[in-house]
Amino acid sequence: MEKHFQFPLQILCLCLLILAATACGSSKKNTQEQEDLSEEPTVQAPLFNADSAYAYVARQVEFGPRVPNTQAHRNCGNYLEAQLKKFGAKVYSQEAELMAYDGTLLKARNLIGVYNPDTRKRVLLCAHWDTRPYADEGEEEKHHTPIDGANDGASGVGVLLEIARQIQLQAPTIGIDIVFFDAEDYGTPEFAKDRYNDTSDTWCLGSRFWGKNPHKPGYKAEFGILLDMVGAKDAVFYKEYISMKYAARYVDEVWEAARNLGYGKYFINANGGGVTDDHEAVIEETGIPCLDIINYDPNSDKGFRDHWHTQNDNMSNIDKNVLKAVGQTVLEVVYNR
Image (tube, rainbow, N blue to C red; front, side, top):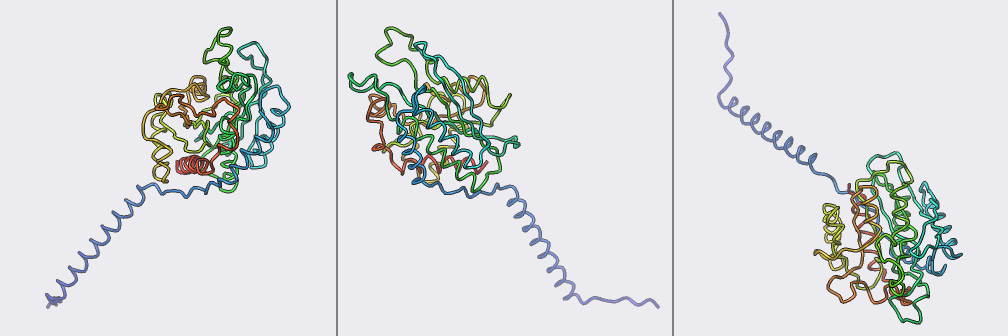
């Protein structure tokens, strides 16, 4: 006679309940794991040191006006090249003779610091390092006097030098190219517009040359960020017109990062005017979308600050808090790609 084992009904029900609970818990766990995998983790960007950036700005100003064809310009160029090498970059020194608005041949020098050269995904960070040879927005008797360019030139470079230092300490996963453009500020002066053409191509000579002759043939980057006049007290950065036309996605990303970091009072979530600057040359010559973080206020009479292209563009205008806001924002964007 065949024996049949009869499982008590109560025990059977208990086992079924345990199995159901286990399956439910496993399902929830798997769902949670899938959600966790779908979320991009936020990378902790390095902390930008504003004191360090300020010192780099001051050091440039100590050389004197960095006007092409001058000893101060040569000395500062050597310093910038040495700093990029010190911070672990592969450095290219791109020398060129560029013709100014009046026929003067400028011995220009673009400096490029490359990080993670073999990485395909890249971001371009840039600023101009030369200074205006004329204080043509100030008193008439000083129109032919070069300016210190603490804000207009040195501030952007100072921020990028500190970023380079941080990259050496904590390398990002992507490739970074830091470019210091020369001969940006040698455009036709106000006092000479009756004798020479005042066209946009008299400005940004170094960036246009680099765009036509990049340090690496066929160079491409996902996008670029230009820093210009990013150190003055109470600076405001509107969404510049050309940047929005060609790099709107990245403008919004940068401005959102700034707001999330608490720098919304500097990065104004509103459109500003268009500015002739190095980012335009980068866009036109390489096709790389490039945005300009620049202290230009479309609601003011002048647009630029009162010290712009005057003898008052000196260290007294530089604010570490503004350097910090810009530098930390750029680091946040670079390290979370």
